[in-house]
Length: 359
Ligand SMILES: O=C(O)CCC(=O)C(=O)O
Image (cartoon, rainbow, N blue to C red; front, side, top):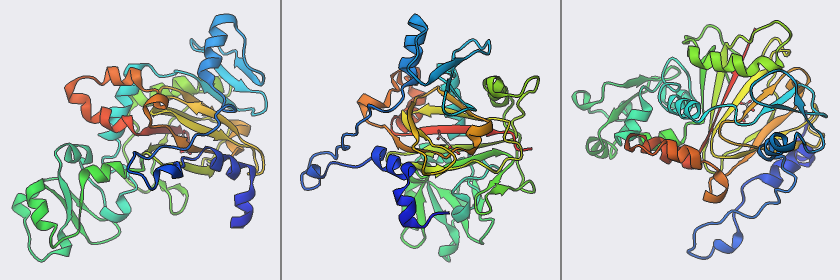
C-alpha cells in the first residue's frame, strides 16, 4: 500500500497525469469554448495502424506479435505483458449499436444494480424517463402526495426509506419547490456503472451471490465466449457469470486498479469498448512499473488473463472532441430519427462492458 505522496510519484500515476484531460488556461478568462490542453500522444500504441500494417505486409511494430489461434480476426499480444490480448475491431458495427442500446436501456434495469442504487434505490426505465424529460422526485421530502400523477416506475431505496418517483416535467417543477428532485437526463449522464449477472458489491469489493440477479443475456455470453477463446486454457470454454458496465462521460477516467476478485485468474476478463475513443494504460504488477499506453476504439476488445490479471490498468482519458472521438461509422449507423438519443449520448461518452468468469 502507498501513502498518497508515494502513490503520486509512481510511474502509473505519472502516466495517468500525462494523459488526463486538462483545459487550456488561456480560455479561463475568455468567453471562448474551453479547449483541451494538447497532449503528446506519440507514445500511445495504436493497434488500428498495427492492424493496417499487418494486413498490408504482415509487419508489426516492435514488441507486438500476432497470436496464432485460427481466429478470423488478427489477435495481437505484447511481448512484455504475457496474458494480454488485443483484438482491434472485434465487434461489428451492428454489434456495437446493439450493445450501446442495451447498455443504456436494459442493463441498468433492476435487479441489476447501478451507482444510483445507494442514493435512489433501484430505478426503473431511466432511459425512457430521460427521453420523456421526466424528473425523479423524492416523495418523502414533502408532506403532500401526488400519487395519481406519478409515473408507474417507482423506486424504493434498499438502504433507506426514501421513495422516489418520476414525474412529468410540469408536475415535477411544482414539486421541486418543496421536494428534492433530479432530472432523469442528469441521472443518465451520471450513470457510472451497472452490473449484470452476479452482482458485484463495491463496498466490500466482492461478488454478493445473495443479491437478486438476472442472467447475462445469452447473445452477450456467446459473444464473450467467442472473443475469449484465444486466451482460454486448451479445451475449455469461457463461462460468463458477471459483467460490469462502465459509463464514461466527458472528463471521466478510471484510476489504476487490479481486477482480483475472481477465483481463477487463468480465465480472461473480456473487455469491450463502445463509443468514444479512449486511452488505456496497462501497467505491471507494481504501480512503479511504467505502463504501456494504447488507444481503445469503439468495437475493440481486450482480454486479460494469467499474468496480465496481476497488472494494474486504468483509463485516464476519453476523447469527445470531433477530431479524436472516431465514431463516424457509429454516427452513420445511428442516423435514424429514433436513434438520436443514443447518438447524442455516445458523441460525448464511452461505454465499456467487461465480462468475467467468477468461479
Ligand atoms: O474501461 C475499460 O476499458 C477498462 C475497465 C476496467 O478496467 C474495469 O472495469 O476493471
